[in-house]
Length: 295
Image (cartoon, rainbow, N blue to C red; front, top):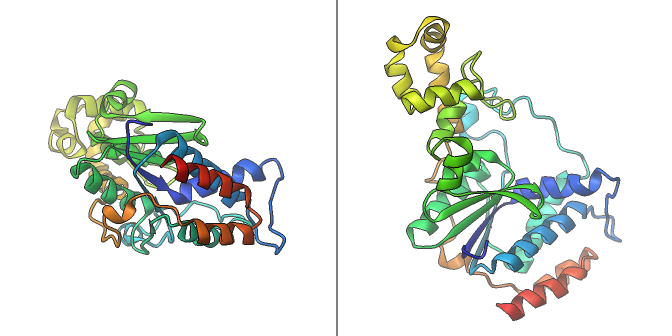
């Protein structure tokens, strides 16, 4: 982690994981004023621990705010099978954003785009500028962002257990390049996002096809070389495969409000102390002060 200097956090993914990590054991924290804080507590613990381990010069948090993004316009059933979040978690998104604003952490959301799109846009900008980027998320879709200068860390148990992906490790473990992650989704779909894919094609078959044909487009172009039922599947569902790939592809041209320089790590201790005290989360003041001293 210390080889990276630009940390980009998937805020929605981290907050949901932080909430359920404590809620699973029945620990739903509230401040004295009745504000739910268990997700906020876990989020701060993970984010500040990551900053402590990585010692980045830049920090940024991206958020999901709506399921009605441009992808719903392409495919109304996109993410249509996802359940609602617990009532105790919903208000913690706003609380967490308020805490980050008080601490001085740049963050962004956009009604038309997902956090992945914001992350992808900033990650590419930062890498193009010479930064070593680490994307911290729980969403495997982000593996498509892996490139020289961009490492993706998939949280399994907070930041204590993560899968780290570089171009080399992604190829070794998945047998695919980063750009082929979306081709994989185009063929096999993704049940968590309700991306359809080609019926009857699973991960093993999809990888085999991509090993031979490289991309969904090339597979469709050469479908005459296929045999039997596989040829029928691709011919019948080629439009669905292309749509599924489009749905899975992270946009890297989202309009951002922060420049790279504005993402430089700089904690605002006075406002941070005030907000953390309001939420009875004073224990994080010491953590912040330690990081400021190290910085």
